[in-house]
Image 1 (cartoon, rainbow, N blue to C red):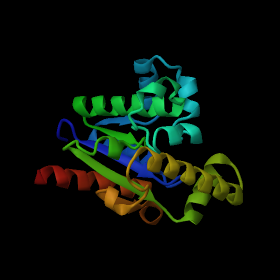
Image 2 (spheres, rainbow, N blue to C red):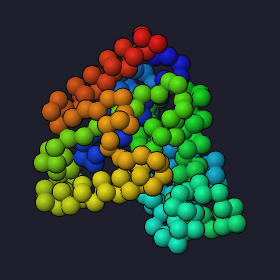
Image 3 (cartoon, rainbow, N blue to C red):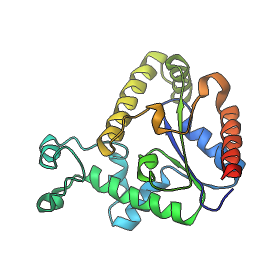
Image 4 (tube, one colour):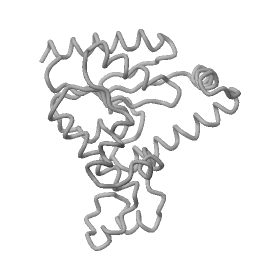
Length: 209
C-alpha cells in the first residue's frame, strides 16, 4: 500500500459494506474507520459521543435552518452559525477527522460522504457496494432476527436516510456511478470475494500511479 491511499465505501443497507470494508483493511493491512469517526469527532469537538451517534449519517431536518442557509450547509451566514443543528456540527467535525486521517495514513472509511470530503485528495479510491433488495432483506433478516418483510421496510427507510444525508451535504446524488471508481454487486459474488476483488483493484491502481 502507498502510505496515504484512502478507500471510501458508500453502501446500500444490508449489502455488507461494513463487512467488506473490514476484510479489505485486513487484506491490505490498513486502518478501518466507521463508528470510530464518531468518537474521534466527539473528542475533537468537545461534543458527547452518545449525542452524535443519534444523528450520525442523518441530514438536519430543520426546514427553517435550511432555508436560512440557502439550502446549503455552507451558505456563509455567520449570523446564525451558533444555531447550527447538531447534525451539521457532526458533519463538519467528521469531515475534519476524515481529512486528518487522509493526511496521516492509508485506511478504509465507511460512509460519511468521505468520497466528497476527499474529492480533491489525490490518493483516494471511491467504492459503492450494492445488492438486490431480496438478498439484502435476507441478510438483514438473519442478522437481526426479524421477518424479511420488516427487513425490507428498514432497508428502504435506511437507504432513503443515507441518500438524503449524502444529497444534502454534497453537490451529488447518492449511488450515482459517476461518483465512484468501482461499484460492486455483493449479492452476486459475496462479501469475501468482493473484498478480494477490491483489494486487487486497489493494488492495480497503485501500480499504475
